[in-house]
Length: 252
Ligand SMILES: [Zn+2]
Image (cartoon, rainbow, N blue to C red; front, side, top):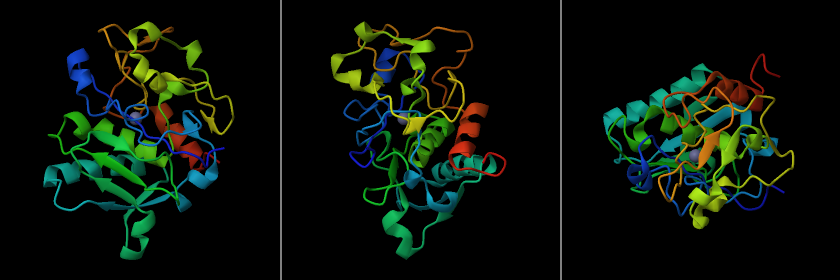
């Protein structure tokens, strides 16, 4: 069941291997790079409603004195983009709401998400290492990527139907990183909300993610993979899935 263990997620970038190794989304000690707690279920979108933010409202708290004005504006922009494209609302937490609020920290620890979805028994936290605007964790898509993890989404490449769309090149992946590509869970607790596999999702890995030899680890099997691993925007499919997950108006 889902109760279990939590899942942590990793992120990655555009750069070639050397840069990937230092990519703040691909911190290798984390499950799937930027997910801190391993989840028992490894699907694209969390299915259990108890892990959704109540009333589609995320109460949040930003660690003080770690982000500059531009970085704070970038976090706000990412939140605004999600709000403008869904029924999700971000509200600064009141003091009494802090224990269950989304804590946004700026540790020098890459970009990662503590747990997938909303949890009452675990820290709701994302970390955004305070990189320069447009770099690392402060690419706008990276911020949205972590926010989508905290809202309940997994990486696209572990969805149930991924083998129809991508081939995982296991021989190019360090064995210690295999866990980042496993999707053997066949329960319905995680699902894709009826959306097709999306190569260009902001939740997709780069083709070279966790490569040990500079060769691709994820190879697309069909057309349409023009932007795999992008960290610029949510795709229309990303937006629809979010709206379906939270039963936003028009998606119920
Ligand atoms: Zn991730």
